[in-house]
Image 1 (cartoon, rainbow, N blue to C red):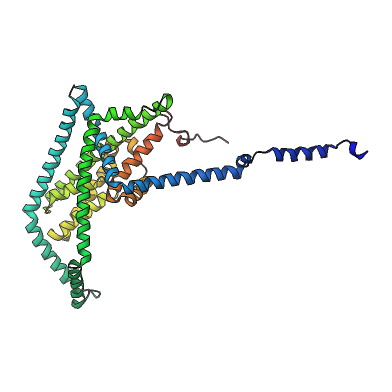
Image 2 (image 1 turned 30 degrees about the vertical axis):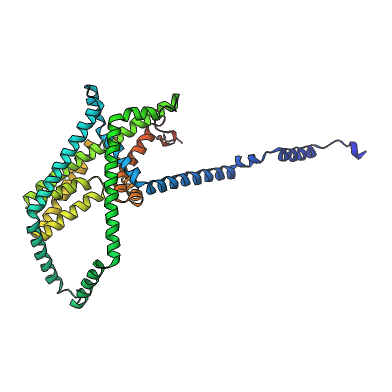
Length: 383
């Protein structure tokens, strides 16, 4: 009789739960909270591994990747000029040659002026530097922690021994190899820049062939935003750097600091490294003034540099760079750190425009003026 006993509701529920657990597929374990955490962890690991692989590839092929990125940024800066010449009916080859020729003429003229200035003032500056160093040594000899003459002679002997050692010779050979790599990269960058200027739009259309529909429109938005961001950043930074260089040049000429023109050019170049570059340029200018003209003149140089930097940061840069190019100082510092660790000085120069381009891509991910969903501003919820 027990075999035909009617099952109770409790027995039915237990049997149903056992059957449900037995019928659950193994992948259902990924659907609960812990499974979603594991999924996200695996995704983060994959993303980090891919990023590490890309960084390793960039570091391994720097002789190709850095010229490629530099050529892309320079081509983006020349894009409005090339588009204007194409609209006027100028052939692509002629327009490219004109743009490159104008660049070479400007750079060559600046280099010639720097060489002439250094040649004219180098002897006087060397004499002043020697006298200033002797005065500094005489003043420092009265300090309690100044090294003894025997210790200074030991340092000199060690320096001479290093210069005549095999280690210095191997370092010189490595320096020759670095110069050869630099020349190779420079030639490669010029060649790539030539083709980017000449055939850039056709190259981009070729790369867009696999995309269709919304994916095609998104890829085109990304390309257009990257070119406009790179171009705007370089043109704006160059304009700000030129104003800084001219302002500091005027100040150095008034204060009669030697090598004023080379220092102004150095200010222009270092301005492409945000935050750090202006500080380095100001220190170098103050050191030259200290060696050549004394500490009072050096203090005036520091004042000129600070004044120009404040005017540039508070008035000029917001107008020329625009809000779209403005990144938070924290983002700039992180980008500079990562860029320096990956690519040295060139990495520091390229880090900020690449970060600005990445942020620009996020801003047009879902539409011309529609950022990616996760990057949109949230409306505060009312309680």
